[in-house]
Amino acid sequence: MRDRFWKVLGVAGVTLAMTTQAQAAWHFVPADSEITAHVAGQGQRGPMERTYHVSELQGTIDDEGRFEMPLRLEQTDLLGKQGGLGGLLSGLSSDSAMVTLSTRVNPAWLSNLQPGDSTTRNVTLTASGNHFERSEQVPLTLERLDQQYYHLTLAEPISVDTQQLMKLDNAQTVLSLLGYKRLDDSIPIEFNARLIQQ
Image (cartoon, rainbow, N blue to C red; front, side, top):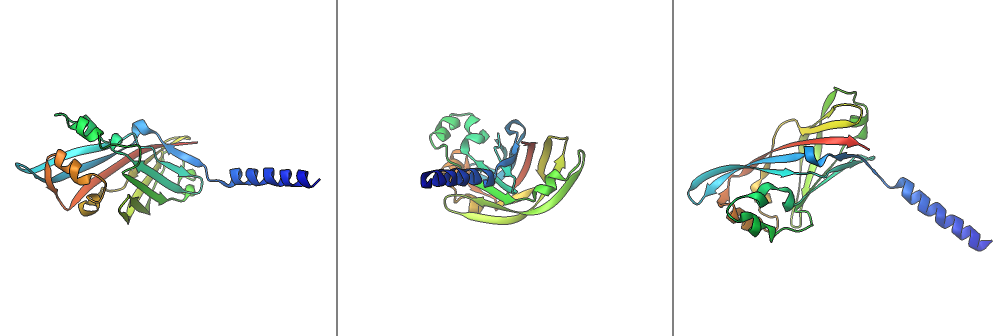
C-alpha cells in the first residue's frame, strides 16, 4: 500500500512538472528572420562602411511571454566573404552563442491582435554574453498577418554601443580580419522576423 502511494505521488509530481513548464507558444521562421547591421569605422585606407546580416534567427516566445534569441557567428554573412576570410573565421566559430537577446512580452499583445492589426510596445531588451550584459528600452512592433503568422520588427532602428560589442569573444580578431582599425561609437541595427504560432 505504501509503495503504491509513493508511485502515485511520483507520477503526479512528474505530470505537474510537465504541465507547468513553459512551452514555446511562438517561434521564429528562420528563413524570414534576420538582423541587419550598418558598420562604419576606420580602415587601413581611411573611412569604410559595410552592411552585414545575421540570418536564420531562431528565437522563441513561450506561453509566459519570455522571449529569447541566441546569436551565433555561423548565422552572420561574415563566413561567406571573399579573400579566404570565411576560412579564417570558421576556425573561431562554435555552437555556443556569441550573445543572447532576451526580453519579456505580454502574450496578450499577440493573441489579442486580429489579422491585419498591429501594436507597438516598449520592452526592455537585454543583450548578454560571456563578459557583459546590457539592457535598454526598445520599441517593438507586432503585426498579425493571419491566424497563424505574425511580423515582429523594431519600430525604429536601435544603436549598439561598440565599446560593449568589443567585449565579445574574438571581437578584436574579427574586426581586424574585416579590415577595420576601429569602429564608430555606435552601429545602427534593424530587425525583422516572422513568427508562427504553435
